[in-house]
Length: 386
Image 1: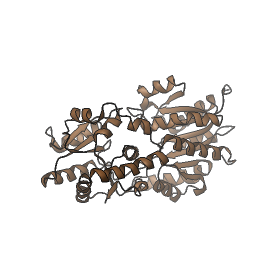
Image 2: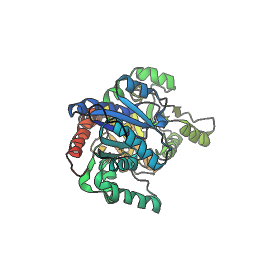
Image 3: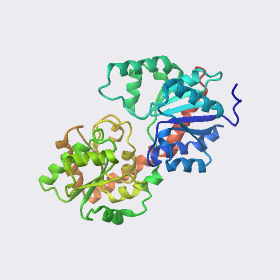
Image 4: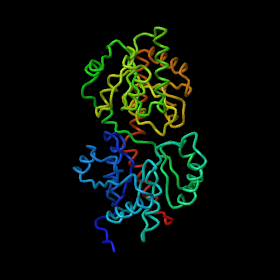
């Protein structure tokens, strides 16, 4: 027989996350601590063991936030038992999952409890466009069988439509756009001149910043094609800085070998991302598939123009004049969009930048996000269906 739980009720987050840095995601979880406390709930975090050794775990524990690691590769029933064990020990009233891996395990753990915690599935990514039949059936069964006892938070309206279309009850699904750590995203340390000097970017060049963790999904091939076309027709001094890990470096190496073109810089991820925004003149987001890109919100918070692919997940920024959309997958149209943005006057940039900052501050702050999430908890806890 298990010991009875101790302590006040909690919200147990279960996240398949192991990023090198805390980033906006972990900052978002931290932002829930005080609003949850006002509801009489503690925040407890459970990460897949891919996060083992990450510095942000020590930072969270130093802030007296309980953190657990769970074996990612365990069989489903074992994952459910691990979730059940932690949920019991932490007196979990809500199980809040992120990035799909723990959705079913959390629902099974809740179903096997004498006093079932409420379950929230937080959907951060859209379904792949070419899913196999088995995956479609699996998602439909998940929505129809487990959905009536869970709630969904979707980071984009497109994802919300997808999950409802797969059979999830619409009355239990909510659209909650991501929150951005605006302070961290705008608090440059090195600043424009020093960062550009370190990157080898001339001060009189237009620098576009892009993030390419998964190069093909993020459209880095399109960005490279567009910049090559611009360089071939002598489109001024423009430099593309791409940020990514080994996967991106290998992708660039396969295309260029060791001799990168003069307009390209590769950079590994860094915690001080605000320095990169301070050094940049625009953000380039050429993704083929997105949930809700944090980088888009960060760029707007920094007053940067954005060149962005016309895909679901990015449509929320369309009302901002400083966003220049191009047809997804069309490198020629992307090149035209880049050429247009780099020719914008400083006055025009300032007007657009102010509009972007205003949107970020009013709609994308961590405080706004936390209020939406805790509002969802209140509905879930008041819901007798579980």
